Image (tube, rainbow, N blue to C red):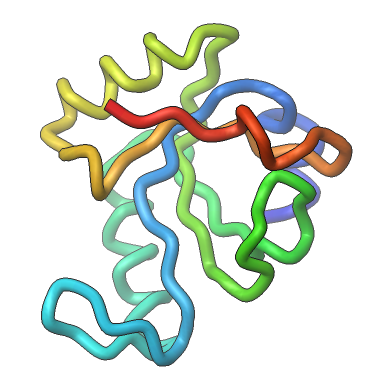
Length: 113
């Protein structure tokens, strides 16, 4: 989804609802690429304009080998994104406000409830 994100969603605040890599153990599961894709596709069916990113393509991620799921809801205000996270039933560990960019620094690109 990189071209779409770069053209439409980049450099704005968006909800990040998942970040996983193969071998990660989280929520009692050892994640592999198939499980990550399955989770992403379920989220894509539930939330508006969900997109899948490879963290290594973006300057605002320090972990360079994660599959990241974001929601295509944008704002200039991270507080609005965090309010969406709460209203959608996500806790702090499962939803953050994130700026996805190819030129911005990591510092200041993520906010949590």
